[in-house]
Length: 272
Length: 284
Image (cartoon, rainbow over all chains, first blue to last red; front, side, top):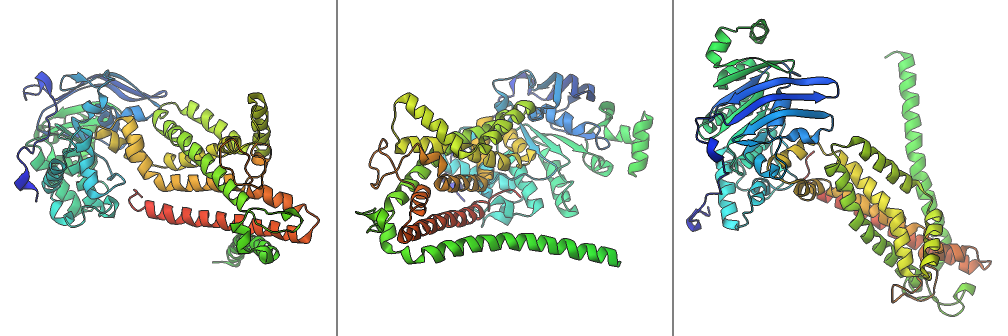
């Protein structure tokens, strides 16, 4: 469909600056503190996220994983109670200090939430939305890319005959894949996934997990989860958090076999 | 279930049933009285003709002047309320996310504006007219009714917008939307069915209000052809005719009331139909 008339189908790349060469961490967090009133939610976080790997932020509920994730694309702006200090470098740009190009910086990252939030429009328009935000209005190019990204998440065959129907009519698993396709269509470098399978059935969860394994070839994935088994299945790098602090981090093989702290040992023991 | 719980259940259910059906019964009763009393006067002439000679003494003609005047005023005022109301409601929900106290203060003021009796708006509008050297006119009526109904549009739409899950704000910002793009392309769409309800609710209030137009729009037997001409309205047509000693004229007041009620019922039905239609694409 549409491919015969397309000559150049690529969307403009996000400028990744000098740090986007794979030798440097794609995300670097330094001295990050988050407060909600008197409550210290994140305590002096220092963390480097490697490129094209799945980094899992693991920890019990309420330990600050989601807040840490939201600091990375500054969605903390939406919460009046949060005060954020420190630096979050996204490939050379400090997202916490940048004021004028925050929307463009956010396009470096796709977001997948705990439950899918399809935009109040058709399936097609959901994917086209982000593409149009990049200033692309060529209909054929948009159509080509909508198909491309729906195929990438394995949704095309399921929805190709009802592209112009409301996205809310899809099953929740399909909606989550649509949200992933929508995020990928803005050509991010990083995927921020906040417990993306927590609302899904086991089959849909497995589809998402398998997609992540494929996507890490081209994207850096930061996955928040409290499910130990999911971390074991997916992680290349694990960051274990508790009460707003990073307790341990490292390769999953080392971390899960030989936990250095009592907290992680307990978590692994309880998780199994 | 023991007898105490059974009795409690029964009594509570009957109280709820009584409250619900008695309210519906009151509405049916009001409509029945209006139609029974105005039935004889509800002729095609009533809606197709303006008052002719001796109309207020039982002569020929109808209340077309008031129907058209009311629709002009309600449409004009609703248009102004939409132009002011959409940005205001979106501003509260998009730009003030980090300023909870300011948001509460603004909502308090809007609620206070909503609660001000319409006669106060009328008096305010009248004072303003005198200061500006204006006469009772269509434009004065439109402006005062707009002041009356804008808080309704803003607060009703605001309530709908505030129920939109934070996740949808996050999703649209994460895709690279600016706050303005999020407001108009996503939140406005998500809240559109609520917006229709807000607009039609405000239109209904505007078309049915007598006190705000009493001093500001004036009254005339003619259909206004310019904004600076006075305009008749249905509520005032009802008021003037109902106070007449002539039974035929009082009958016409009920016929005018029936026309107003029909307009408001049509608006209510349209609100239900349109909001159901536009909520199909919405996140639930």
